[in-house]
Image 1: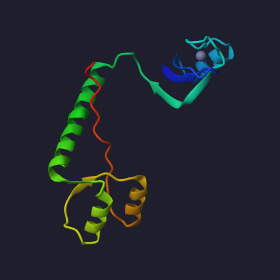
Image 2: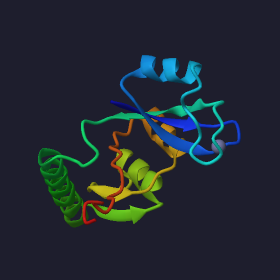
Image 3: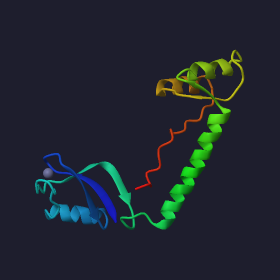
Image 4: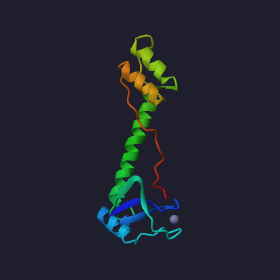
Length: 140
Ligand SMILES: [Zn+2]
């Protein structure tokens, strides 16, 4: 099954489930897809987000996998917290200082903007970007 984010002519967004994208085109052409809010059948796909899943509820494997990932992520952040100096928004400044041997050589972590990322790349500084930890949303 494929889920498409759909939008009616009045701007209501809703999710539609289809066998495949051909089934979506077919049903749309026949006017079988109607907005659940206003019954409008002038439906279009809202951007390109879609998902494929086998069942509405995540399977045991998926839940276990996510739990394992969360654990790995927590360990990673724990390690980073203990071993990397938090320099916050001074990251770029500090990284450049260390790069040019002006600052104390050490592991640092902090925040960069995309402009700063470019600058660091141009200067040849290796950095790794990690998404900030999110709370696992499995406790529902
Ligand atoms: Zn609508």
